[in-house]
Length: 162
Length: 113
Image (cartoon, rainbow over all chains, first blue to last red; front, side, top):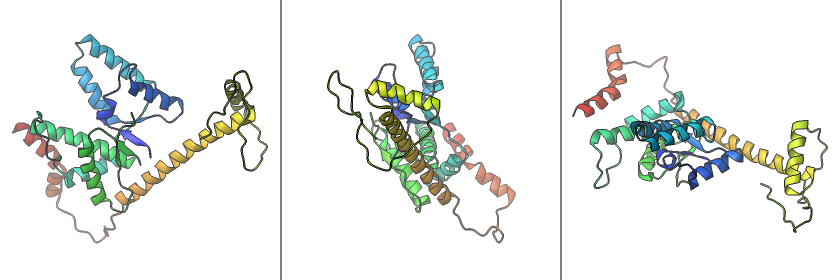
């Protein structure tokens, strides 16, 4: 089944990299990679924060062109996804217990958790699975969805294809 | 999906034998042109190229249908609450507003901690 790419996968996109090659290949055969719009927010935020560094300015320009050239399909966080996300957040207010040496503050972990919930809800409402390197958090999201909507097909959390 | 047929250097590739009903089609000019170009690239017949293009289209159609059907199944589950709204009791406005703004409030409180 087709999977939505989360930020951990999208953030590996680099000019002339393997991931970019894979994305272009999928676009050429008419089956573009699906990317969460929320992940575009995260990625462009990170690049913009470093915009004084010309390398990041170039990376942001490249990434923007890739997105606007329809190299991949950005799946929006729409009304259906929002209805789902609110319910997941209420069902699981906290992310799974942190790994040791997680340098992020509690507030940052909460903010990241809300973004993960939005991405999981986007995939669920769009009829997709989710591809991520952050399996633990998304399996928690999938578990909440399973409890909320036991009659529907579950959200599968899969490894990135590349 | 139909894969590329085997060739020997310098020879024209033979179309992959296909099974199934025969049909006669009126093909739009743009599609015939694409099929012609593909046939030349693969060294096969235009008919074979048309079948390959149709197979690609069918695969895309099946994939999109599966996604759409799962999206609708999940949506039915999301809206499937059978509460009888005509008989339901609702919280007063103040209490409802407080609940509706709880996420924003708890995130602000955490940020201030």
